[in-house]
Image 1 (cartoon, rainbow, N blue to C red):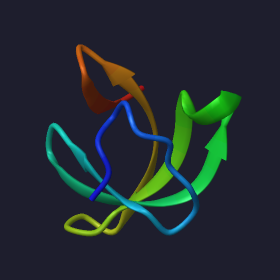
Image 2 (cartoon, rainbow, N blue to C red):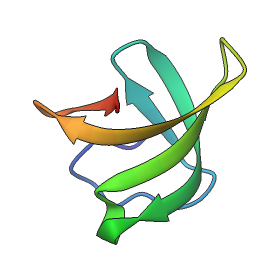
Image 3 (cartoon, rainbow, N blue to C red):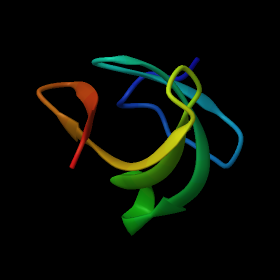
Length: 56
């Protein structure tokens, strides 16, 4: 898993406030990602808030 400060790329797994996400698309130089939440089978846009990936 990557940390919020490390660069992410497609297919990385990132840890969010509510579980793990698989990165589908990276935008805005890694500041915004589109990711699949494996537990709920839903897709969300995430950004780093307070040092953690969070849904927007």
